[in-house]
Image (tube, rainbow over all chains, first blue to last red):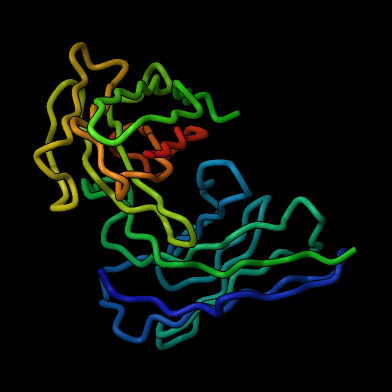
Length: 113
Length: 113
């Protein structure tokens, strides 16, 4: 799986959009970008994934650059409950993949009241 | 609550003792994963099962570690002759093969004194 680079930490004001960047410059054509988050003392939680088109669900939006070397996770209206470590993961084949997930250190997002 | 439960939630043991953790996945999920997470790091994949078959083991899974899923439902992870370096959070996740989202349990936090 390709390596990802994320900032160690970020702050965001409550109610504002939180934009979390991820660099994956060595991504291959068949690798997808996934985002998980881990709230303190809980297990990781799936957020969203995509290949090359932008994706949106009830939790977040994922914007992937045209060259696919970087992406941004957007939480449109951050709340205090969004304070967590956010992991960007690159891997091959959604669904059919047998391997476990490869997590980096992630970005610690702190939502300020 | 994701529907994945782990027991116990916390375990303190002395070096050299054996410990066993249990994971109960979401009932219809045929894949079950074990991860280990140390302080300040993302989770690291250890092993996974499809039904009762253990299909992959990470090199992190030393000979002192053994995992089972005897009837394709719950799983156990045993650590023999614990060492202080085994202190970590042990996470379990499950999913349906063919679908992407892994659902994580709350983890078992192990402290080896």
